[in-house]
Length: 342
Image (tube, rainbow, N blue to C red; front, side, top):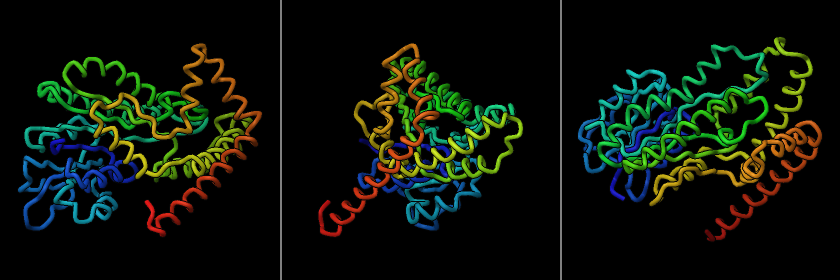
């Protein structure tokens, strides 16, 4: 693979940060740019002396003032193999300015990762907040693709990688609007991929389950403090006493790290024939299969209803058993590494 220019959105933390660092440190130098001598550039500054033969990983974020964590994680890669640029997916001018700052506007791989979350009873969420979420999660992707796709089509090559979610395939209780945004992302990409392939442009959806990041931590902290007076007491109780408790167990038992998702995304990027969909967590494969097994939707709806309202104690027990097994597996791996085994 010849060195490629990669532009990633939403890199101030989480998956975007982990992926930017992983690609910038790629030992095969497939995504790396080399900077000449001198002082590394400040975040957002366009470094000079970058070789066009080895273009950089371009890590973007809405507020470059929050680039400290990325800069620290990148270490010596910053300014040599990784650039930090400002890009707000909700602002067409910001997207265009970022792309115009790249030589020839040449982006081989776009990773659309920027996103926001929302969980809770529908009655407690404002339409303004819902519209803001859709503006970031869905229309943010649309703005990016509108800007990069014409250049990729003209060059007859490129790869658009979208960090979607398992909730783009199956709605989850109390994630109505977030799931809607990811369903929109999935439908948009599924409609676009056939046209894109005609121009040798690949589109891939990376679909994680729960990921342990600041994104989720903040989301659930806000949910615990929220005002539920606008919904009925029974719904509020279901959310606070069932959903939030079970969600913690799901994240601690089945959650992946941002680094895990970065490795999965790398596999998608480096594939000779990139897959259209790639699920990162095998624990969620049965859920997707169950939905497709019954087009009426009755099977999956009944299964989720029973899990939430009838067998939630069994669900929690199962999740804690999985957590114990994962903990033991990690201990075995750590012991093997100490003994010199890979």
